[in-house]
Length: 462
Ligand code: ADP
Image (cartoon, rainbow, N blue to C red; front, side, top):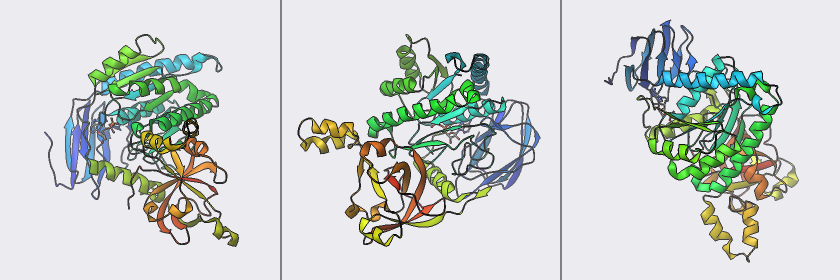
């Protein structure tokens, strides 16, 4: 019973256990105010009277108790429904919470102190990210400190930019409009306890570069574990991991993620078949329980153009902030030609790029003598490659580059391919004569002399 509407201002009364679903696409926006009762957006409570503005979203506001909402704007569609899986999701949260209580009762150095580690899997557009937000929101409301890991390289980049694998530990309420928040400063109300851990994978799907994807999963697993070892509350709370879209053909990757993060529970959404193959695969592994969860009837397929608009918005937010927290990026010049450095104007950087697929690169190295191609593969030379100074040109304009935590000088393919990210710059202009780039940077001053990594994903914008 979806109603297309051009109304600009109206109120909606929701009975208990109902949710208000609506869709907003740029350039229009919709503002919601809770005027009576209680309500939550994907697990995070709305404050009474406060305006929440949405520009690129398909949200649902749920109420356990009943509420009244004042709506301003003309959402592309809006309706209320009482068919939601919220009670099942709440029960999952309660089960996780019991394990957290048990973990907190154990001495900090024992294995038992490790809280539940849940992995959410399923095909695209079944509500994995949404459930991840709900479980995170409930854990935070319970006074816990959940660590959220996003392995969905092709998605919106909910913790960082699209194309990344990222992790952050949350200790305060989440941002209602933005979910987790992707600006470098983090939106004021979505404050991760520490800056997110970010790796730039730079391809849309794990399959496009599965060897490097797995290496980054391993790196992330190690980094996350070491953060948890420093923070007993976060360790007791455990992990909530959002996977990329996967089906039964990806069982190898699922097992890999389960092993690297010591997963204790897998929740399967939206595919009976995936649930069956996964529960069979882990039948003999008592440390991992597999549960099947219903998808919400509100979950909608998002058209490619809408997804693209959300990705672009995430990139814009990284550099320019949002209505609540405006950022002013700096225009900085970077230099790639060693011949220019004599003048001492700017440090010379090294540009690398992500290689499309392991398969292509394998054929590229096949001209090498036997043994050497194997060595090249071991060093990750099929996964990222150094861009020769002569090849630096305008194909890099309007793309994002990751500034890696590895020095430009002497870095090899392995260091570059597996390094964590310091931040991102956005290439505005490339002068292919002087080999200088004009980039937008969220921080003032020179870009440090680090290796820069260009990906194939997300595609350029602005
Ligand atoms: P996945 O992570 O599986 O790709 P998402 O959680 O991102 O799926 O959900 C897909 C889309 O459906 C998102 O735009 C999300 O906002 C929307 N959505 C999820 N749950 C609901 C709901 N209950 N009502 C309305 N829209 C929803």
